[in-house]
Image 1: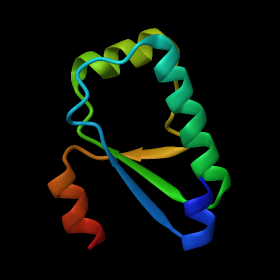
Image 2 (image 1 turned 90 degrees about the horizontal axis):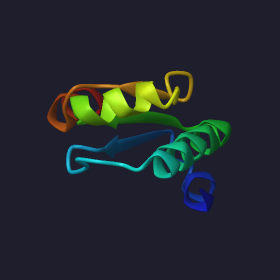
Image 3 (image 1 turned 120 degrees about the vertical axis):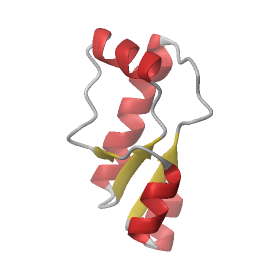
Length: 82
């Protein structure tokens, strides 16, 4: 989080395409990280979310829409923001 403020990062792309599974407590921690990123004034963009992971997040009641934008793929996101 310190790097976001120190470097004045405005947009942070987080690619989750390599993540097949995440435990419930890790999903909850990830939600808190996204909230912190948002509080630092940085826009978080999630890419590469797999359907199994999304289903688990929804089932666990995890909501990150207010703290992050979602995009389909990293390539799609980079085209838009670079």
